[in-house]
Image (tube, rainbow, N blue to C red):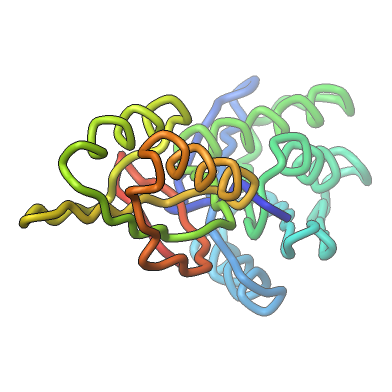
Length: 215
């Protein structure tokens, strides 16, 4: 997979539905063991809640999927929660929705809507980033070529992540895998062969608040 959405920082969302309180806690996880430990932690934290329903998705292809209604009518909590995670195409994430019963029955449809909306609120409160497979590309050029390279990178939505100016210029940029070959050709052509590619390291990367993050 060339890119996937992951949770960088988990969050917590809340909603009230007919006096029932729903608290959604989202956390990034890398394995089933991590997910189960997180669920156990939430059940301990909210030990006095009516229900602690859960769902998690792990794997590059979302191959590991689990959910639990935790005592709610079958199919009204865990599966709708899982469907939200899959619908948002988020990977390696777990969510627990804690319910404090408010005294009014919500009905099957009401429960499905409440648990689904709770997960959406939890994801909205989390920091989700796009992890990409690509390369850290280091380019050397003379001062005549720098403007052209900056233009070509900007055209493709790529940013300069490092630079060094001496008698020549060296730049670093993070390039998604699918853009790499075409970018190299464009830079070579645009600088009439004056640019040199010093490094091309395979990396997984993302940007968090505009700052590069390597995995």
